[in-house]
Image (tube, protein in one colour):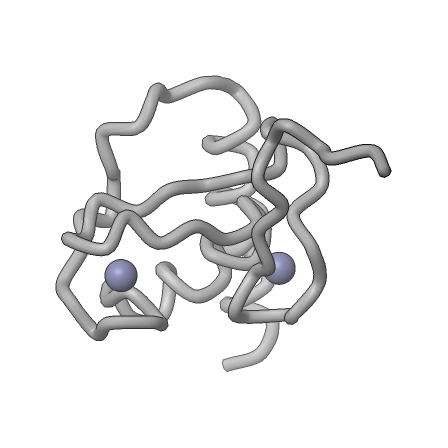
Amino acid sequence: MIVNKDEEQVCSICFFKIKKPSQKKMLDCDGNHCFHQKCIWKWIVQKNTCPMCRQNVCKYPSFGCDYNEHFHYINALSKRQHIK
Ligand SMILES: [Zn+2]
Ligand SMILES: [Zn+2]
């Protein structure tokens, strides 16, 4: 039986597995809860709390800022304006 060394985590927003580490986003809440980047960005744009523990998290969290995160954030912002 092959055991994946990377713990497979399930995103609590979409309930799909987070397969790649690059898709994963860890919040700076006490539980260090993890979600897909694109899922949590959409969420965090609307309410800056952790979906799991409802703890306040930073809108611009400290977890390494690379192009992906910024892109998702902008993307989420523009979608939000569309919904209104
Ligand atoms: Zn997800
Ligand atoms: Zn949490």
